[in-house]
Length: 286
Image (tube, rainbow, N blue to C red; front, side):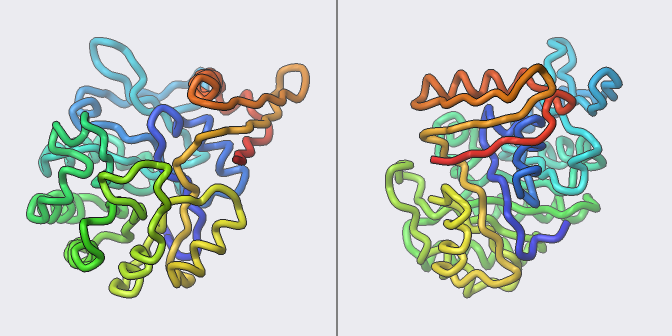
């Protein structure tokens, strides 16, 4: 997996499923993150080849729920993001999917109470030793790239210090969301503090936050002084989605979904689509 000068689809819970990732790739995403999967969930899964739809499914034993679905078409660009608080369990989960994905990423930035109460996501930001343990364990035992995604800490200096410690673990890249844990989506992303991380590291930095359209890619590159080895990120915010897709049904479908209710409906529709149903792709704008 090469991270230099790439456009990256950010991980989005309940959105970053296989049909969405394939559509995003057709509209220019070089690297596509899947939605975060908790390690406890994945270790209960078994790998199955789904010949009916031409996919590889990771199915939870007992419930028969498909926890993660991928296919050969995205093999060289899909990143599997894990929610974890334990190095051994993270490795067990990663080893289940590692032959079917391009890279593994550890979520260290989710501010939701579910993640934090379980010691995952942003809870890891205050545990640098555990971060080191998780990342070095994965690096030693996996043959695919390992990365992680963090948020800004209380001060720019603290963020840079943590980023440097993460770099020393041997990760292939670091994603930085330009907000602190207490910030809300309406608060502007602090691109200048991402720039501090870029200046301090030698590995690729994936900048995340307030990237809504293609013009914003160049804006965030300029603001963070990201050069060829740094990566703008297709942002995970989706306040208003306007979706166009061309399907192999009977005609071109054009729909607009606004607000939380519309987004929920749109995500439901996306989940029903299989790769064979979609001829072209999906365009997002706000």
